[in-house]
Structure formats: C-alpha cells, structure tokens
Length: 252
Ligand code: DC
Image (tube, rainbow, N blue to C red):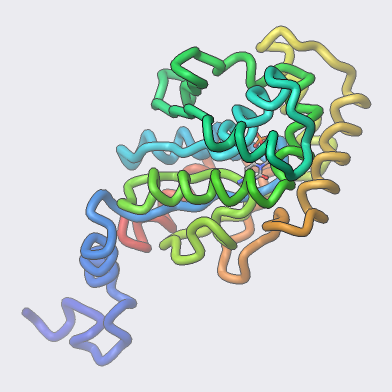
C-alpha cells in the first residue's frame, strides 16, 4: 500500500480513514451502521429517515409508531396511562409487529393492521402520556434494540441517540421552527383526512414538545455528539444529501 493511501500511513488517527471506519463498523454490525434521527414532532424525521434509508438500502425503524401502537392498545382496552397491574398485563400481552411498507412502516397489533389507526387524533392526544411511562419505555427500548442492533437501519424517535443506541455511528438531531413544523404537520393531516386549524396544530405540537422534553424518563434531548440539522428552510433533497454524506463518512 502506498504511503499516501491511508490516513494511518500518513501518521493520522487510523479511524480518520473512511475505509478503516467502515471495516470497524461492519465487524460490529453485520448489516451496516445505525443512523439515529431524533427531534421534535413535525421536524421531518419520518420523511427524511425513509429517504436516507432508501438511498442506503437500509431499513427504517419508526419508534414513534411503536409508542402510538401501545397507545392504541391502551385506549382499546381502557387501560389508563399510569403504572400498575393493568398496564403490566397490557405490555406482557402486546403482540406488536412492524414491517417495512411502500409508504412507511406497517404496524400490526395482534396481527391486525393499525397503520392508519395509530395516526388518529385521539391517539396523538394520548401518546405523550403513554410514552412517558417507565414500563412502556423499558418494553419499547428492549424491542428497538433487538430490531436495530445488527445495523443497516435508520432509527427515528426522541431518545435514539441518547438512550436506545448511544453507540450509533451517526446521530442527527433534526429540528425546525414551530410554525414550519405546524405547516408540515397540517399538510400531512390533510392528506390523511384529519383536518385541523394551523393554530390548533401549533398548540398541539408545542404541548407535545413540552411533555416529551420534560418527562423524567428519556426526555427528548440532543445527544452531545449529535449533528444538529435545522430544516426550517432546507429542502428535503439537501438535508438527505447532507445526512448521506455524513453516513458514508461513518462507514455506511
Ligand atoms: O414521532 P411521533 O410523533 O409519531 O411520536 C409519537 C409520540 O411518541 C411522541 O409524542 C413522543 C413519543 N416518542 C417517544 O417518546 N420516544 C421515541 N423514541 C419516539 C416517540
């Protein structure tokens, strides 16, 4: 090997060379690296995660969909959002399955498709309270690690870089100003047939941000080593390109 082919040969840190990093990452994770994308509601995590995963040939793990599915199960079984035997029984019997679908993750509860049901307004209103419960988080984090630890996955949520995969090879904190997030969420809701006013949506997002950021267990927080990406005036293509560049640098 010529002396100028690797950083190591030049006397730099060996892990500065993308090929060395790639080999090290693959030894640990046979399917590729873990890309963690965290951020507040409406920052564009799902769209970005799907686009990045498609370009890398990776899977997507939508952890918000998992908390939404637990919320659907709790609402259907009339289990209130608090710790106790009723919640323990619900979690013990939970048959939650996630499959990649053409326009996002397909979510099943007990075999039945709840992909649309998890986006209903009553579920959105209740999900922050359910996802703040320690027993719910324990169960979901365990499942998320099992599903993602082999790598080759883009995992999106609120605590992925801080708690679920603190050793993720790439951590992104995706953010945008509240008004812009409300505008995007309004467009998504309209497409899904759940109309709401811009004010209502902004209030809901602000309320969820506050609950998600202030809860005692794994609050929404930016990991110290996460790359902060503000998408307020960034096009999807540009933010995806930037994340892909970083992912390749980290061994994807
Ligand atoms: O991303 P989303 O809006 O579908 O997430 C729904 C809720 O789930 C959100 O209010 C916070 C919670 N959540 C969480 O607490 N931790 C995660 N890793 C993902 C989502």
